View 1 (cartoon, helix red, strand yellow):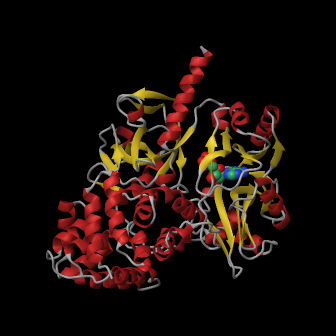
View 2: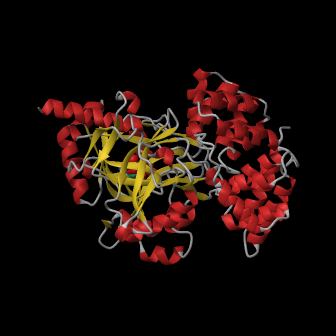
View 3: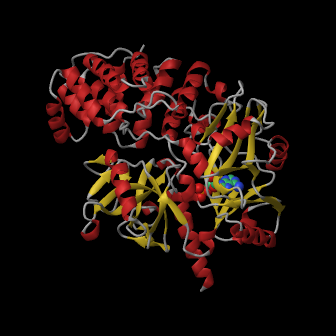
Length: 580
Ligand code: AMP
């Protein structure tokens, strides 16, 4: 059995190593030495979690409580911990410093996971004190380096920078070959639980990951769409007939009816949002959808009397953990179902969209809050133009055009689905989902708030974030105040190691929050760093950016990618050359 100390040493090595291939090698060598359950535990602990994200096991511990636990374990005062915190920059490093070097031992990886799970599952009246005491007793056994990562885990600030794809590559290196990386990725896309993928491969090799079906209760990673610059591009990219659907402006949801009949709803980030939409859950419970099924749709704010779509901002009021019932009455929603992935435990991932849609119609009858997405089967530009005009007139934000014979490509953004939004047509340029990596302090009217935010795109291949723009426009004072409290827990003393920013920010943040912005156009820039390696040392910048909204439904790894931005830049350059 491997010790938690060995894992903490691996974490420290990963933090010291920036080369992606070296990081993968380190991780692979460690994973090779594990039993199935241990590999599952490592998959979670690497990202400071104790279970797959959709299990909803969160520590819910504030920095103040963790500081008290450290003081309790060490027999020192909270004041001393605080002093150490301000000199070391983070509470994990403070705990490491306070723990006598080399002393103590937390035991095995599995023991630590068990203890951490016990802390996460404490709830109720005196749970805060119980959490503090349990953490203190775990820390009392730990060596300095163990304490550092234990504290970062409970605070949700484990920043080892191992993205999902990097972890899968390491797992492939340890238990299969590089050419099997696709099989691992497909398995992870089918059930988004890195722990389960790890346990299976350690137990049964790569063969255990081939031809697997979605499991009700475990989210499937959602299929995503490419973006078209104009409707003509869609006809060029789509071969054969296409299902032209309205693109609704709400929250994507994947609804599972598991083998026991229980209904669960997951967001695009694979978090469990079942409690947020009780009326949708109720409607599905009364539908003909059998046990062992998974369907997808978009939940939107909806006026049931006028049968009218309402703006996304209204739906955001439903994003809450408390007073849900009052808001169910205040903000009505509708589900626009558009896909079926599993029916009665039979996988439909490889079934053509038209057939999936026919099954959806059979099992998911419209009525009450349930609707089916508006769609037309077509193949010609004129049909796209007509649907687009109709979609906008109905309050949808554009079109989602899908290859009628295409499979459901879990976790992939390809050209089998193509989106086209209103903003694209208005040539306000496209909208981008970018990650906040830094901020400039506000002056004058914005004194005490942020003046602007530094935003970056993600590059999954390099597992890094590249700065694209600095946005100040469109940020209301109310939002700026909200951002202060949202970003405070993400503060860093310097630029995050995975971020390449051309701007020296006043404040740096861990890349975690995604925001949507629009802009005028993309230009070459000596400052920003997106696609710099492909553009002879110049990066791309988004000009005249304007904040649109927070995108809590997206994780930083789901932000607009560097490759997408580069492609947009290329087609804008060739477009303007063609027009001249
Ligand atoms: P974007 O967030 O701009 O990348 O657009 C993709 C999102 O559009 C999906 O994740 C869904 O939440 C949403 N969407 C709205 N209508 C549809 C539809 N008919 N089919 C698929 N996705 C849709």
